[in-house]
Length: 359
Image (cartoon, rainbow, N blue to C red):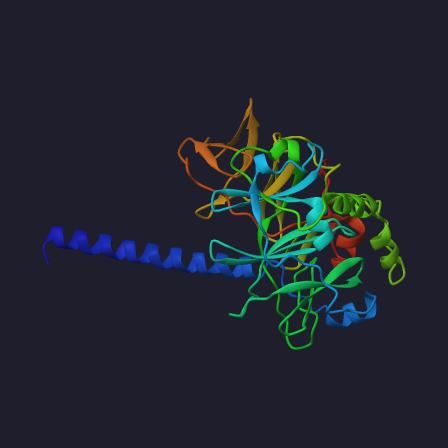
């Protein structure tokens, strides 16, 4: 074999080795994603802590949602609370008073079956993939009017099986299965999101009834009182403290919004995952991302009016997208996390710790 051929062989061998290493790492990352909110077998806990009897035929979920452009959403007020979801470049807006009344919106967007859910008693809004992990079936979910630790229990209309909204877990002894959160539902106001491009969930009934319902339950302590009948609330924080929680493998952490400074980038590590919390000044909300790019851990900081990573000095926006520099076009992946009241998060994840900005 001549020298030139030998060089080609070595180059091909190196490429194959790199591909194999990269392939294994990608599979590992996928497995980590699937096991992040690992099922905890809540079946027995739910039976002992359930408030009310699940009623399968009382659901008022939306099964044929209709979306309208912002200019037609004349029923909206600037200070109305809404939930924002980005999907394939389109922004979907769910008014909190409509979503809170119906609890569940069953939908298919761009071929993806979704369950858009909101429990007002625990302040948890989650967009689930309606196909349970390890299953090819699609769920059609409704509300049972029963709760665990104040958080509502859903049921599948085809099988009658019960699912916990906070964790997406199946409340059955047939096996540990769960729903995966696909997209974060971001809480903000109509004034901050309204533009010609957004699609707004249209009301199914008169807006006055939605507003009356929302005014009764938006700050209700009913969920907390239901928890107190079964458990003693965790006293490390005020029970109605609002924040977001994340569980990675065997570790869980709660981030009180009051403890997160308005610094636009906060680095953290949990369960072996490097994380960054980015603050979006436009929408006045926090987002959490995994701070990796092709297995390289990035460290974020503010640099004047920009967010940059120290390693490549690329500039990032609050959506986790690199907008300039060597990594331009890169997008950070978002783990599953939940916005919720402290009493609910700590009941479902009793070993959780609490983020402190001083530490």
